[in-house]
Image (tube, rainbow, N blue to C red; front, side, top):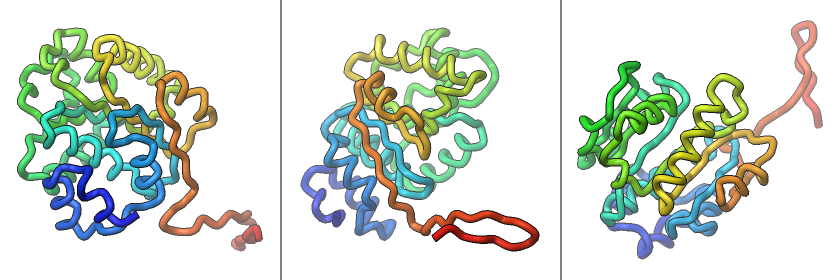
Length: 221
Protein backbone atom coordinates (compact mmCIF):
# COMPACT_ATOMS: atom_id res chain seq x y z
CA UNK A 1 0.00 0.00 0.00
CA UNK A 2 1.31 3.43 -0.95
CA UNK A 3 1.35 6.06 1.81
CA UNK A 4 -0.51 8.29 -0.62
CA UNK A 5 -3.54 5.98 -0.33
CA UNK A 6 -4.09 6.95 3.34
CA UNK A 7 -3.42 10.66 2.87
CA UNK A 8 -7.10 11.50 3.27
CA UNK A 9 -7.70 9.36 6.37
CA UNK A 10 -4.79 10.49 8.53
CA UNK A 11 -4.05 13.94 9.91
CA UNK A 12 -1.88 16.08 7.63
CA UNK A 13 0.87 16.24 10.27
CA UNK A 14 1.07 12.43 10.37
CA UNK A 15 1.38 12.21 6.61
CA UNK A 16 3.96 15.01 6.44
CA UNK A 17 6.09 13.48 9.20
CA UNK A 18 6.24 10.12 7.41
CA UNK A 19 6.95 11.64 4.00
CA UNK A 20 9.76 13.73 5.50
CA UNK A 21 11.29 10.54 6.86
CA UNK A 22 11.26 9.01 3.38
CA UNK A 23 8.41 6.57 4.04
CA UNK A 24 6.36 6.13 0.88
CA UNK A 25 5.37 2.46 0.94
CA UNK A 26 3.65 0.70 3.85
CA UNK A 27 4.77 -2.80 4.74
CA UNK A 28 2.31 -5.74 4.71
CA UNK A 29 1.70 -5.69 8.48
CA UNK A 30 1.00 -1.96 8.37
CA UNK A 31 -1.43 -2.35 5.49
CA UNK A 32 -3.22 -5.23 7.22
CA UNK A 33 -3.46 -3.22 10.44
CA UNK A 34 -5.10 -0.29 8.66
CA UNK A 35 -7.52 -2.66 6.95
CA UNK A 36 -8.29 -4.24 10.36
CA UNK A 37 -9.39 -0.90 11.82
CA UNK A 38 -6.20 0.67 13.19
CA UNK A 39 -7.36 4.19 12.33
CA UNK A 40 -10.97 3.47 13.29
CA UNK A 41 -10.45 2.90 17.01
CA UNK A 42 -10.33 -0.90 16.86
CA UNK A 43 -8.23 -2.94 19.29
CA UNK A 44 -5.54 -4.90 17.46
CA UNK A 45 -3.14 -7.71 18.28
CA UNK A 46 -0.28 -7.50 15.78
CA UNK A 47 1.85 -10.63 15.55
CA UNK A 48 4.54 -10.22 12.90
CA UNK A 49 8.31 -10.90 12.69
CA UNK A 50 11.01 -8.62 14.09
CA UNK A 51 11.71 -5.57 11.88
CA UNK A 52 8.42 -6.00 10.00
CA UNK A 53 7.22 -2.50 10.91
CA UNK A 54 5.30 -2.82 14.18
CA UNK A 55 6.62 0.46 15.63
CA UNK A 56 5.24 2.42 12.68
CA UNK A 57 1.84 0.82 13.32
CA UNK A 58 1.99 2.26 16.82
CA UNK A 59 3.11 5.64 15.49
CA UNK A 60 0.25 5.85 13.01
CA UNK A 61 -2.47 5.28 15.59
CA UNK A 62 -0.89 7.39 18.36
CA UNK A 63 -0.09 10.39 16.18
CA UNK A 64 -3.42 10.36 14.37
CA UNK A 65 -5.21 10.38 17.72
CA UNK A 66 -3.02 13.15 19.16
CA UNK A 67 -3.16 15.48 16.16
CA UNK A 68 -6.93 15.00 15.87
CA UNK A 69 -7.32 15.87 19.58
CA UNK A 70 -8.86 12.49 20.41
CA UNK A 71 -6.43 11.86 23.24
CA UNK A 72 -2.88 11.10 24.30
CA UNK A 73 -0.95 7.83 24.27
CA UNK A 74 0.99 5.53 26.56
CA UNK A 75 3.57 3.14 25.13
CA UNK A 76 4.29 0.21 27.48
CA UNK A 77 7.60 -1.61 27.11
CA UNK A 78 9.09 -4.45 29.19
CA UNK A 79 12.52 -2.92 29.85
CA UNK A 80 13.88 0.47 30.93
CA UNK A 81 16.51 0.27 28.19
CA UNK A 82 13.82 -0.14 25.55
CA UNK A 83 11.87 2.78 27.02
CA UNK A 84 15.00 4.95 26.75
CA UNK A 85 15.57 3.82 23.16
CA UNK A 86 12.00 4.59 22.09
CA UNK A 87 12.04 7.89 23.98
CA UNK A 88 15.18 9.06 22.16
CA UNK A 89 13.80 7.91 18.80
CA UNK A 90 10.47 9.71 19.18
CA UNK A 91 12.07 12.88 20.59
CA UNK A 92 14.17 13.08 17.44
CA UNK A 93 11.35 12.28 15.00
CA UNK A 94 8.61 14.38 16.61
CA UNK A 95 10.08 17.59 18.08
CA UNK A 96 6.65 19.23 17.96
CA UNK A 97 5.23 16.78 20.52
CA UNK A 98 5.83 16.44 24.23
CA UNK A 99 7.45 13.03 24.74
CA UNK A 100 7.89 11.69 28.27
CA UNK A 101 9.50 8.71 29.92
CA UNK A 102 8.68 7.17 33.31
CA UNK A 103 11.05 4.48 34.50
CA UNK A 104 11.97 5.57 38.04
CA UNK A 105 11.67 2.95 40.78
CA UNK A 106 10.20 5.62 43.08
CA UNK A 107 6.46 5.47 43.86
CA UNK A 108 4.73 8.52 42.42
CA UNK A 109 1.37 9.56 41.03
CA UNK A 110 2.78 10.44 37.63
CA UNK A 111 1.17 13.89 37.56
CA UNK A 112 4.49 15.44 36.56
CA UNK A 113 3.91 13.76 33.17
CA UNK A 114 0.48 15.36 32.78
CA UNK A 115 1.50 17.45 29.76
CA UNK A 116 2.95 14.54 27.78
CA UNK A 117 1.47 13.61 24.42
CA UNK A 118 3.21 10.23 24.49
CA UNK A 119 4.57 8.58 27.62
CA UNK A 120 6.95 5.61 27.52
CA UNK A 121 6.99 3.40 30.60
CA UNK A 122 7.21 -0.15 31.88
CA UNK A 123 4.09 -2.03 32.96
CA UNK A 124 5.29 -2.01 36.56
CA UNK A 125 5.75 1.77 36.51
CA UNK A 126 2.33 2.44 34.99
CA UNK A 127 0.69 0.08 37.47
CA UNK A 128 2.37 1.98 40.32
CA UNK A 129 1.32 5.38 39.00
CA UNK A 130 -2.30 4.31 38.61
CA UNK A 131 -2.38 2.98 42.16
CA UNK A 132 -0.95 6.28 43.43
CA UNK A 133 -3.55 8.39 41.64
CA UNK A 134 -2.82 8.88 37.94
CA UNK A 135 -5.20 11.84 37.55
CA UNK A 136 -4.65 12.44 33.81
CA UNK A 137 -5.29 8.84 32.81
CA UNK A 138 -8.70 9.98 31.56
CA UNK A 139 -7.00 11.88 28.75
CA UNK A 140 -5.39 8.73 27.31
CA UNK A 141 -6.94 7.41 24.10
CA UNK A 142 -4.36 4.86 22.97
CA UNK A 143 -2.33 2.22 24.80
CA UNK A 144 0.49 0.41 23.00
CA UNK A 145 1.71 -2.81 24.64
CA UNK A 146 5.04 -3.87 23.17
CA UNK A 147 6.21 -7.47 23.61
CA UNK A 148 2.74 -8.43 24.82
CA UNK A 149 3.69 -12.13 24.75
CA UNK A 150 5.34 -11.45 28.14
CA UNK A 151 1.89 -12.06 29.58
CA UNK A 152 3.16 -15.64 29.74
CA UNK A 153 6.23 -14.66 31.74
CA UNK A 154 5.95 -16.00 35.27
CA UNK A 155 7.60 -12.98 36.86
CA UNK A 156 6.23 -10.07 34.82
CA UNK A 157 3.12 -11.53 33.24
CA UNK A 158 0.75 -11.20 36.22
CA UNK A 159 1.45 -7.46 36.58
CA UNK A 160 0.86 -6.88 32.89
CA UNK A 161 -2.35 -8.91 32.93
CA UNK A 162 -3.72 -7.01 35.93
CA UNK A 163 -2.68 -3.71 34.33
CA UNK A 164 -4.49 -4.45 31.06
CA UNK A 165 -7.59 -5.52 32.97
CA UNK A 166 -7.44 -2.35 35.06
CA UNK A 167 -7.09 -0.15 31.97
CA UNK A 168 -10.05 -1.82 30.28
CA UNK A 169 -12.18 -1.16 33.37
CA UNK A 170 -11.07 2.42 33.97
CA UNK A 171 -11.04 3.40 30.29
CA UNK A 172 -13.77 1.41 28.51
CA UNK A 173 -13.28 3.40 25.30
CA UNK A 174 -9.50 2.94 25.16
CA UNK A 175 -7.84 1.59 22.01
CA UNK A 176 -5.40 -1.19 22.85
CA UNK A 177 -2.69 -2.22 20.39
CA UNK A 178 -0.66 -5.30 21.34
CA UNK A 179 2.62 -5.93 19.51
CA UNK A 180 4.69 -9.10 19.42
CA UNK A 181 6.97 -11.10 17.16
CA UNK A 182 5.88 -14.41 18.64
CA UNK A 183 2.66 -15.53 20.28
CA UNK A 184 1.73 -19.17 20.67
CA UNK A 185 -1.95 -18.56 21.42
CA UNK A 186 -2.62 -15.45 19.33
CA UNK A 187 -6.31 -16.21 18.71
CA UNK A 188 -7.06 -16.74 22.41
CA UNK A 189 -5.17 -13.58 23.36
CA UNK A 190 -6.92 -11.47 20.72
CA UNK A 191 -10.28 -12.73 22.00
CA UNK A 192 -9.34 -11.73 25.56
CA UNK A 193 -8.30 -8.28 24.38
CA UNK A 194 -11.44 -8.00 22.24
CA UNK A 195 -9.03 -7.24 19.42
CA UNK A 196 -8.74 -7.97 15.72
CA UNK A 197 -5.79 -10.28 15.04
CA UNK A 198 -3.22 -9.11 12.48
CA UNK A 199 -0.63 -11.69 11.52
CA UNK A 200 1.90 -11.77 8.70
CA UNK A 201 5.15 -13.61 7.93
CA UNK A 202 6.84 -10.90 5.85
CA UNK A 203 10.27 -9.81 7.04
CA UNK A 204 12.80 -7.44 5.41
CA UNK A 205 15.52 -10.09 5.37
CA UNK A 206 14.79 -13.71 4.48
CA UNK A 207 15.18 -16.11 7.38
CA UNK A 208 17.23 -19.24 6.73
CA UNK A 209 17.15 -22.20 9.07
CA UNK A 210 19.86 -24.79 9.45
CA UNK A 211 21.97 -26.91 11.79
CA UNK A 212 25.45 -25.89 12.92
CA UNK A 213 27.91 -28.73 13.55
CA UNK A 214 31.70 -28.84 13.57
CA UNK A 215 32.11 -25.40 12.05
CA UNK A 216 29.64 -25.97 9.24
CA UNK A 217 26.02 -24.93 8.76
CA UNK A 218 23.69 -27.17 6.77
CA UNK A 219 20.68 -25.11 5.74
CA UNK A 220 17.27 -26.64 5.24
CA UNK A 221 15.81 -26.41 1.73
